[in-house]
Amino acid sequence: MGNQPFQHLPNYWLSHSVGRPLKNASEVLTEQYLNHWQGSEPWPLWLQTIQEFKEQASQLINAEATTVCPQLNVSSGLTKMLNAMCKGKPNPKILLSEADFATISFVAKQVPNAELRYLPANADVTVLSTWTDYLQEDLDVALITHVFSNTGMRAPVKEIVAEYRSRSIRSIIDVAQSIGIVPIDVAQWQADVIIGTSVKWLSGGPGAAFMYVEPSFCSNLEPSDVGWFSHQDPFEFDVHNFEYDQTSHRFLGGTPSVAPFAIAAASIAEINRIGVTNILTHNQHIAAQLTADTPATWWHSPALETKRGGTLVFKPPEDISNRLLHAHQNNRIFLDQRATGFRLSPCWTNTEADIAKFKRIISGN
Ligand SMILES: Cc1ncc(COP(=O)(O)O)c(C=O)c1O
Image (cartoon, rainbow, N blue to C red; front, side, top):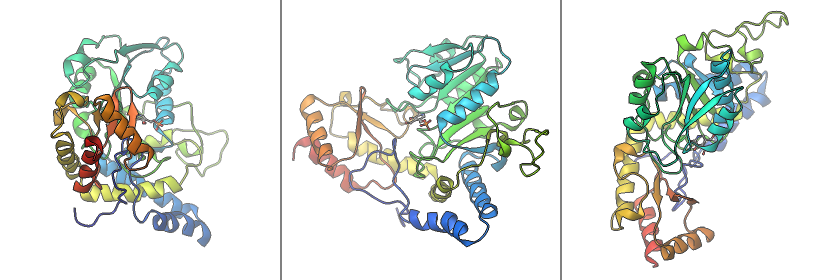
């Protein structure tokens, strides 16, 4: 793996929650944030830091930097976007899934007079036919999770978007669990909006989320949640004149935070350098070894790599579960548990030694 930029913690499998930090995270924070603050006038340099985040994030998804707007988290970006998309619609119809991360539903429920239609929790979201079964012509927006957090299932986004788009149904894709581990190309997807976060597979920490908005669609949206950075000339300061910025920045709002974007820009730069395809290949290589020598029925994530994101879901018999829980309590393994099973997310820093450690724990040695 050559020069490893991220910090390795033995037997750490939690990149679906918090990715491993950069080894030089504190230097990055000092150089790109504190030094600018302690030096002279910080804002011109801080804005460059945010611009660097936009450039790295847009490179990751094959988009122009102007189409990427920094956000605090997925929930906040989705709130602004969904309300802007549903503005003026007396009874907007929104498709989502019971298997989405809960925040998606919580946000959608707040849209005035919205009618929410759910794919059931047990639907096979990895096949296009499930999504076309729930395609109704009167839908306004489809909320599509790319990789589902509790099952590791990966939805065929490009095909789903094409079907919905051909009926003029807009799409918002939640890439929180896929960005940085599954390659994403917005030019191929043709989705209207994608929303992601840096805290998981991007190893960028919390507070550095982003929203991609397709430019021609963006120019028709009028978000209600604005601020001076949403104005086309933030430094004009004429209280009687507000005009939306021409780019995705109309969704920026007030003064942006800087520190989270400084760290995330540096970690995404490393991910761009390594390449998401290489990271996924490494993930699949480790996953193949983790799942080998155990019954397939113990693994509740999809066996087929094309239907899976980066996370494996492991539900072994009770004695093995207890061993894992015990090892977890003693900090000998770092994973978490949902109703679907234990979640194990092989990341770029995981090694053969981590696989051996996992196997020793489950075999009771
Ligand atoms: C699929 C998915 N979407 C969104 C989120 C988090 O949303 P937010 O950034 O608002 O906390 C998570 C977090 O686990 C997630 O797994």
